[in-house]
Amino acid sequence: MTTTMTPLNGTDRAAAVRAAHGQLAPTQHVPMGIRVIKGPGASPATAPATPQDTPTAPTTPRGVDELLRMAMDSDLARTRHLGEKITGLVQNLTARIEAEQEQRQEREAAEAQRRELAEAAATLASQLAEVRQKLRGTSGRDSAASPQRSNRREGAGQRAEIRAWAVANGFEVADRGRISRQITEAYAAATGSEVAR
Figure (cartoon, rainbow, N blue to C red):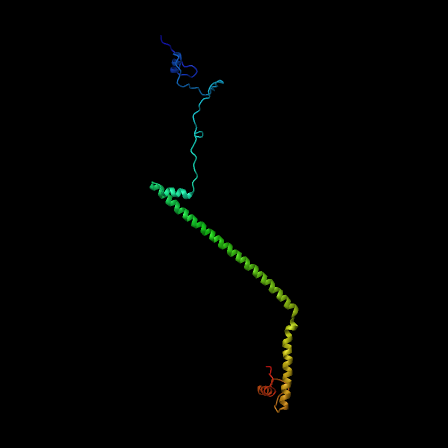
């Protein structure tokens, strides 16, 4: 007797035959859109592990120096070459950063010195202005001209004395104008006084 069975509810023919003979299907495929709810005593279904659920070994953070040392000790030439290249780049970067820091320090020092010099110049300018103001207050044009006037007075008085001495000693001298050098030298030698020019 041959039993003919048709697929029921999405189950294939072989599964139906196994079910008719009392054999369990190795896996039960549930059609899409159908939700399977198990009873309270059933064990939870084991879902396939996802990459997020798979425990991973903790990675130990390594510094650049340690990585470069490991690269130099590697058995692979390509890894050693990459380590040498990165070492050169690190050295170039270190030199560049140090040069930039040195230039920044020089600029800051020059700026500080410029500010100090500007402050000193401003202080000196202020002091000079104060001194000039004091000079204007204590000595005006009259006091500046007074030494010249006194020199003129002294010179006129001395010339009158020289003329009087010259007349008394037989020298010919005009009442006005320039006195000859011979007379002034004779007056200076006779009186021991200094003649103002």
